[in-house]
Length: 328
Image 1: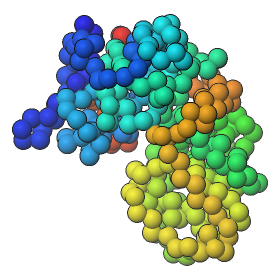
Image 2 (image 1 turned 120 degrees about the horizontal axis):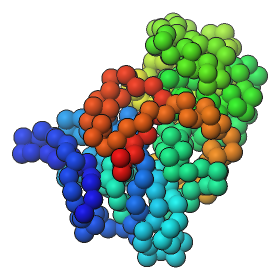
Image 3 (image 1 turned 90 degrees about the vertical axis):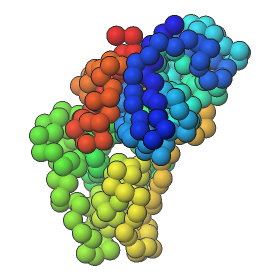
Image 4 (image 1 turned 30 degrees about the vertical axis):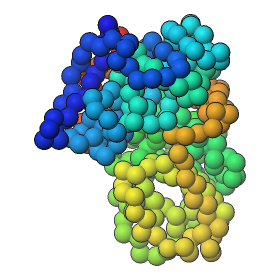
């Protein structure tokens, strides 16, 4: 028997969460049994733990947690053997398939990636899905060519934004971080941001489809009206890697930035990335993300903290990366 945070839904549609002892027989089918060591708290986890599951949870009872890192206990797939260190992000784990908020998980072998040299399980989850998404975004910008001038990161104090700032700064780029919380300015500067931009400055109503050519690239973790405004501020031929829906799925923009300034809008989906791309991204994380900056982002937690922390995530009250020691 082992501990798991189980979310249930009653006949009236009300959800509740509790730490429960379960057995391996209760886990869903899969090729690999993993002893989970660390998991994280992300925005999607907050939605999964909210009343109704935010439309994300496909089955109840359910174990949330959209990523985890740990050690293989048993495997029917020859690619993995007992004792291997692995990390998992994506593939609807914690939504359609039980996730990381338990001391054990059983998943398909195709969903896993060997933990890269230079990262331990805790560091991997300090990176987590948010940091993995950040690296995918940096790689996409690099593939399309980052222009001269500052690279803008919206939602910079959040999980995706924090890691993006640290990676970009470590690679030598000038980074401008957008935040709605002035108290996070020193935190963002410690990660390498050279410019702090108030959210209100970017999130004003779009009055003109094109403004001054300001940003050499952008990682947008917000979406909505902020993304629309940023598109009109990009340099000619610059790219925006868009990962966020916190500001809404709508895009109140015109085609003018794309037609007259050649702006590239790059959609980044961390869920169903091909194996080679996932492995490349994790290897780049181990190489290009400074571990001292990573440690500064970590907010430690345990399973019993999760109901409150997921609510805080939805309310924008958490900065950095919440790393959950499931065995604490």
